[in-house]
Length: 343
Image (tube, rainbow, N blue to C red; front, side, top):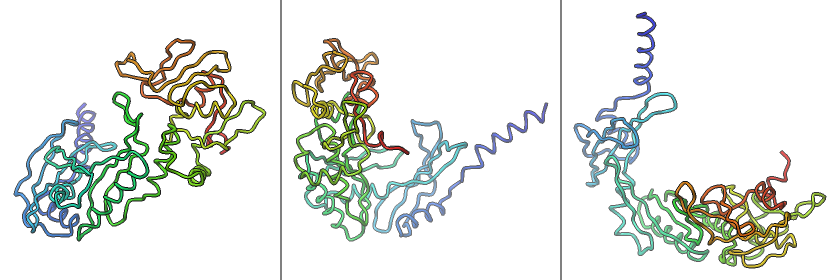
């Protein structure tokens, strides 16, 4: 009996202890030198015990002072790994530098967003844009901030696309947002513009007019979420229209469905934001981004009308239909490019 109980207990002890490392003051000094390239002026004699509300483990916070007087922290973070308890070091050096330097930046639309958790400062630059012009302007501001420092600045940033259907209850549509860390290289404007174009086409936003027909065609060349339509199984899918599905694979949006119906020769009354049509089963369908109500789970969500009866979308924040749903609900054959390609 003793052998059968002792061995599992020993294994458990090894499981919890074998994947952690005890960090001392000299280890923290070495870590700081590796991260900052400088030897710290001072490291606290003992760490402070802190707790993370997301787990039950005790973590250890070290306070570091640099030669120039900058004070930041290194956290010895204990957490559950793939199969055992483990720990690792993380710090708020770049975040503290951002807080200290923000007031010296060139005039900018970026706000400084800060928070604190377990003694670590979390800071990032936050701004928004509404179209291609303001996207480019804010990226130029980021470049000005990046080059204003004598040393490469590793500041986190978030650039949010402010668009009409960004939020529904707790959900946020973030497909065209630009985020990252300012470093040695400038922000990739071309990729940011392409992501913006895809979302503008997805919801048929007015900012799609910011792009020329040639730019649109180039961006859609071989794009896996490009949308094709057909009215008969004997036809090939027609991908000649500038239509796209969700970049996050949610399917075809309310607005793109409007354009797809027109491309199929189906009579539609209304605008991409609010319209009605008769589906292949003879039902009158009315779709609008303004149609939303309280779902059973207590969240505000989208619905559409079928013969004046409210039909909830599969999830509260869905304003897209998958190709399968378009076929099952309305008898429509609309596919994304990837769905028509053989493996």
